[in-house]
Image (cartoon, rainbow, N blue to C red; front, side, top):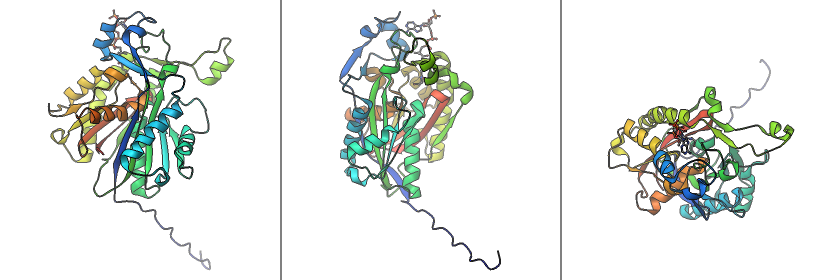
Length: 339
Ligand code: UT7
C-alpha cells in the first residue's frame, strides 16, 4: 500500500544439506514368553502360530519395564552409538500407541529423563508405521533447519492392550523399544519417504472402544486391540511391495543395490510375499526379528535393525529398505544407509 513500509522478507530456515542415521539402540524386555504359554489362553497350537506367523516366542514387559523406561533405555543406547550427547538433541519424537495419558506426550518425559529438557518433544500416532513417519520427519527437520539432531524412538507395550483370550491377536503382539539419532550428513543417508493412509479401512485394526465408551460402560475394561487379520494380511502382502518399489525408485536405486530389507515385523509370511513381489535378490539380508520378539508395532523396525547388526547380517554403511504398515491403515517406506 502506498505510504507504508514494505514488510521485509522473512529469512528462510536452512539446515544441513543431507540427513542420515547417526546411531541405533534397542531395549528388549526381559520376559521371554513362548508359544506354549500363549496357547493356554486361546484355542491354538505352537505349530499353528509358527507356521502362520513365524513367531516362536515374544518379549513382554514386566511391571518395572514401563514404556518410559524402555524408551529411555533404547534412546541412551542410540545416543551412545551415535557419539551425540543428549544435550545436543533438539527434538525428541516418540512413535507409540501405548502411552495411556492423552496429554502431555511421553516424549516430554523421555527428553527430561535424558537430560535434554530444552528439546522439542512430541509423540506420533501412526501405529506400526510410526517409526518410519518419525524418521521421515526427522530427516526433513535436519535438512529444513528446525533441528540439527533428532532422536526418534519407537516404543510399545502392547501386551497390556492385548486380550489374552483373543485368538486373532493374543499370539502376535509384544513389547519393546528401539531408537535412532538422525543428524547432518555429507551425503544423502535417508531417502525420500513414500507414505500414506487409507481411512476407509480404519476398522481393520483398532482399539475395541474409545475411552468415553469405556468410561460409560457398566463394566469398564481395557480397550484391547482388535484386528481383522486376514484382510490386513492381504492388503499388506500386495500393496506394501508396491510402496517399497516406489521408495527404491524415489531413492534412485534398484533392488540389486540393496543390502538389507527391514519391513515391519508383522508376519514372516507377509515379509516373504513382499520380498517375492519385489523380486529381491538372494544377496539381500531379510529381517526376521519377529521369530523371537513378536510384533512390537512402532518398535519393530529399529528392534529388527538392532538384531541384524548384532548378528552380523547388517553393517554400518549398508543400504536398507524400511517398510512400515499398520492401523489406519497407515504406511511409510524409505531407503536408509545404516549407521
Ligand atoms: O502390525 C500391524 C499389522 N498387522 C498385521 O500385518 C497382521 C496381519 N495378519 C496376520 O498376520 C494373519 O492374518 C494372522 C497371523 C493374524 C492370521 O493368519 P491367517 O492365515 O490370516 O488366518 P485366518 O484368520 O485366515 O484363519 C485361518 C484359519 C481359520 O480356520 P478355518 O476357517 O480355515 O478352519 C481360523 O479359524 O486359522 C484359524 N485360526 C487359528 N487357528 C489356530 C485363526 N486364528 C488361529 C489361532 N490358532 N490363533
